[in-house]
Image (cartoon, rainbow, N blue to C red; front, side, top):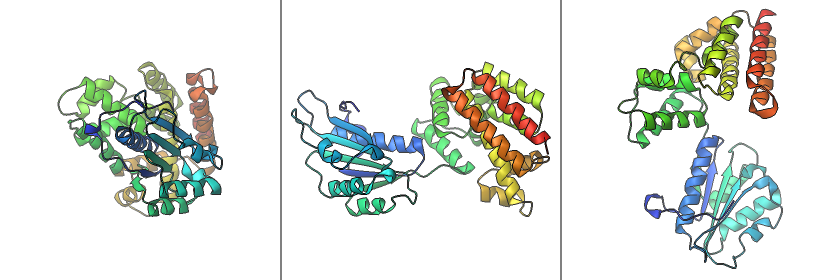
Length: 336
């Protein structure tokens, strides 16, 4: 991580000597890390060249004593900001060193630690908080209502508003990945005016809301290969990212698995609350489940996982990989 330039302190929260960021929602974790680093950089004395020494490392890459080397005073003076990511993967010696460092930070040194928040190395969280770390939680955004709240927050922060139909249309058009949703919000904020409605989203995406990865996924899990392939080609032609399509295929299969495992004892409203999805989605999944078995779903999941690897760079053609995945999904359903 290169030396950090000094941001204005006027818009930043007060820096904490030690910041602990807990959670596995990557976008929120990255934002929290960036905010903590920016605040620390603004509060640090600059070196002779006007920068602040900054280090961004993975915990698993650290060896015993490495943190001491990183916090050693610079010949050029100035402050130091150290980011240690994925602290759940730190070994015993490095974990102990993190705790000692948090308890007695050298002057003008700021420590930012991220931890996924699971059971692995969980004691480190408590020890860092006990040592005085400011804790920032970034839990996964899984439920439909949570994603709606996330979108509202993105627009509110920019001084804009979107109605519920606009937010649902955005989820349908883009998918559930927070990075993609945040980028979509930024685009809409920059390129539109006034209230963001369903009509505004549909107009902006020029047909993508009708031919997104989710439309492709719906046709594929229903066994409609011709329509699924047609929707795929249209989605790719209108700019839908192949990664979004594999994500939609995976989510569509995952939804079938969740709804199928829950059985039919609960009403759509009750099951929707339990699974964190709207009732209409439960109804649609129950209809799409006809003809599927758990074995078929498992094979289809494997095909989508393989396509995901291909579209992320290991394959020559993302379109070909997606077409093959769709044909496999339809075949898995047809076997039953």
